[in-house]
Amino acid sequence: MATLPESGVYEKGSLDFKLLLYDALYRDPGRDGIVLYYAGTVKELSREGKKVRALYIEAHPTLASEKLKEICAQAIANFSLNECKIYHLKGTFYPGELLVLALIWSRDRSQALSALPYVVERYKKEPLIWKKEIYEDSTEKWIVE
Image 1 (cartoon, rainbow, N blue to C red):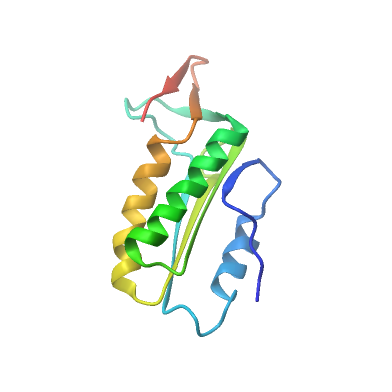
Image 2: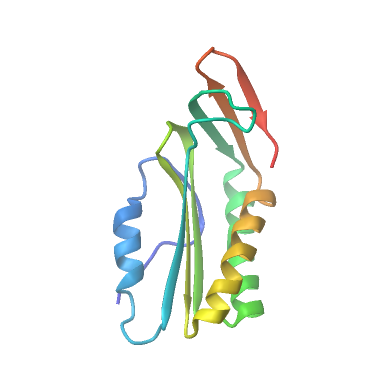
């Protein structure tokens, strides 16, 4: 059985999302009927249509990680999940790079499918995580979800 790190905020390069996903799929064979994941990447265009050169992510390490754990604990309780993990990276990212991975394990697909939007919407708004888009024209903008 694979042991996965705790939910939380991690420095870019400190977690390998491909290995985490592999471990998530094979962590406890036969226990879960479904494993869902959400992988968030950097978009090439801003909401206003500006070309994004990079995205800078900063976070309050303790408070943001604790909030991610809380979101998972509440998702497990509210949707009868087997487990939930959220990993958010911080640092400078470029279009197409992965920066967040949310994982949900459940016995039944209905709980997992209901839980995923709940988890994603909460992680995007509640933790103390800040995003700054840096555009091709060298301007910058802090993003508010």
